[in-house]
Length: 282
Length: 248
Image (cartoon, rainbow over all chains, first blue to last red; front, side):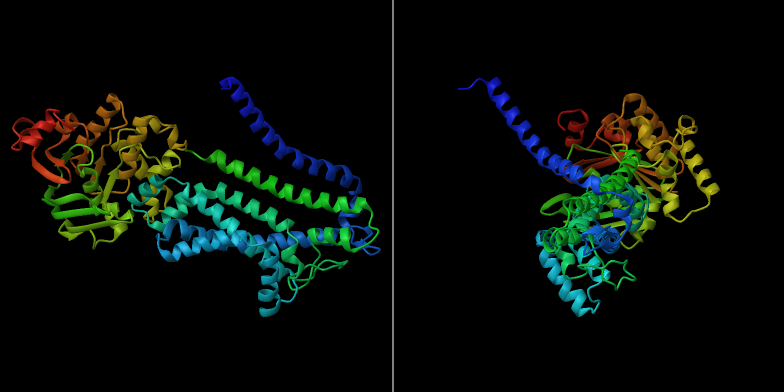
């Protein structure tokens, strides 16, 4: 028999070690990318088009491309995802049909991203005849992040106490008024969280944009949503594996910008969420 | 004048029968107290008048509930709930300011004019005897009020919708004796203009405020009579036992 205090110490130590193990890789990724990428960041790098076969110049078109894709994906997925979440949480009765819908959403979240890419190619590029374009890419990314947004929003809606709904209904408010004025405002922080996760995912994925939008080398800004575009993750892949003799600095610089963009978006969303949370009165 | 007529009401939640063949009438401008131990169906009965039971997925009923000679199930739901207010067992302010809590009902019924809303709010808060305590802090969160204040705010919020009937579902179960006394005073005052149904676990409270008292047990209405009669000479032995505290 071991002394309970020894057991406790061992338990504490293994818990602490596991937590530390999570932090170490994340911290190292950030440190290495900042260390190697930061020297590459100049005004020219951020605002110029790639030159000399992407070995010099900047990455501006890829930054803009990624921004467009993320905005497009969220603009598509957030309204649809939120409305679906409201339906599932507030209106759907517990029957076979709705269980199938919920199961489908869970499975959608588990589909590998390259499969989304193929789907986007078949659905938007070929069948809808959008071609390889920002529209196709944004829609593909949008479908990929739908399950994240739906699941997070549904959980946020379901976390609003049932009593609030009863009180609102008991005062003669309609079901929609109850959702609009009581349930939704209190679910916003959770919905924002889901959207943040979706944005991070959409900004970072390569496979879904591979066949649907990403240009190998397009040293100009896209002209419309039917134009192809460069995007940071794909650009990073290209200069790391497809183009010989790219300076390491340029590669890490690109990675740094991608990381910084995702973190900035997250930070903005966290601030918004914090403001809403502070208003929360229960 | 008869406000409610309930005939042979049965209610089930799944396989459990919560009410068994209840028939009774509720008169206008009376306070009807409903007493009984837990699981006697008194809250289910109250929520039936307001059609809140329907929110449960496996709810079934038979029999009829008439309000002003109209079946409550045929009346427009929002209109019914505007006519009938309910005060829940725990104070349940909405996560809004005090003012927005009181004006929530009227706003949802389409009143937009700021002046109208302010007037309604002031009048309702006065009727619920809480105006003096909150008039300077109307835009603070309702959660900053004490439990007793919150409950009176909930009463004001219900009054603001302009109901004809107010249902109280154990309104004082979470309150201290002083707050309880204030809520009871409010109820007696409100009786002049409203029909009140009070479900309570507190037998003494029923004796203090009720005009008539009904005793529920295991989903059945055991006895209904004037409060004096119930508390001095009940005709059913089970009623007598319950009031004397022999069970429940």
